Image (spheres, one colour):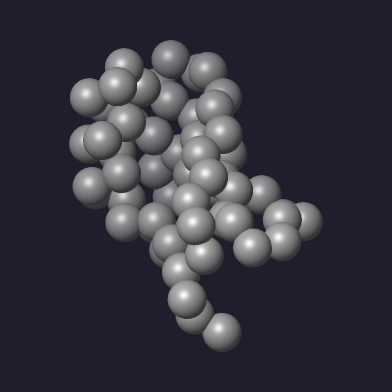
Length: 61
């Protein structure tokens, strides 16, 4: 997992949530650019599978 902070991701809690849903840790996150209001992340689990994770806007300007 990269030490770089990503806007809108609380790494520990999201990793725990993903693990409970079958995405094995460690998990790598990267922000996918080009979105409008929802933030979209590329999520790669320890199994090498790539998934997409979307979240609503953070409310930050």
